Length: 293
Image (cartoon, rainbow, N blue to C red; front, side):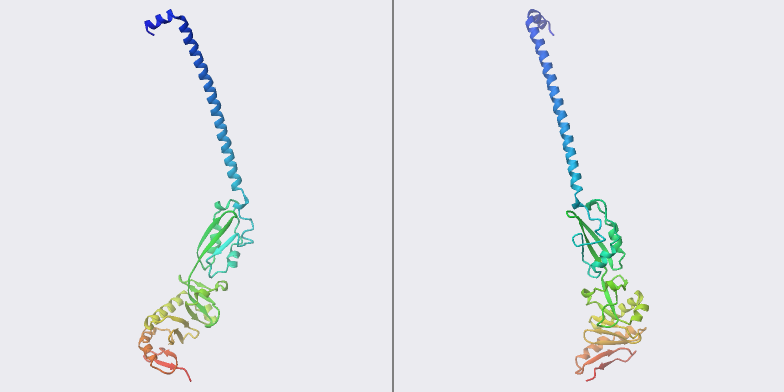
């Protein structure tokens, strides 16, 4: 405070009183404002806590609704509205449901459910290649998308008989009668054999040998092999679109004998009689077997 201000105050005591009074009022107002702010902040905190509790409670109630949970008997009593299975062309749906009957239902909501147990059960089937599990809520349900192994050869005991087994593209032999729903694979190679040979002789090694012979025939004939008849082991036949081919014994000369197909097939169109088969069973002799009138 300057000397002039001091002199002014001394000279005007009423001004000093006014200044003090104004200061007291200012302090009182600040105190009231602080109290109001504290109340407002307290109310905001209480409101935030209340909103937080309401939100948490709402979330809890929402995710505990029955629509988020699979019924406990879902796998024991499967229905199409609980379990939807798609893309299973070979394995019947009832077999898949039977395979999953011991899977335990998760106590958690559907979006937290793990699919490991379902996949483990389905991968135990020899025709299963890949399994995808999708989960849906309201109502809780699952969709199982199957990817099966692809049949490349069907084994029968006669041409018109039902399939007894089949080989997959990864050389696995499937013998289970539940997996013989093969209508969509009717165009693949048919192998005709006897029931006894099916049990004792048909394996991955034998199939590889047959595959090689089929490739030779298709290469030199230019036609697809429809079936491979090995019911008589020493007298094997193959059928192509144009005719049947007698290969005879499968030995070291088989490839050389098959090579002669491309020279014989063009002659068939010049023959008036109906041909039964081309005989390539001899080492250096080939002839056409005609059907009897």
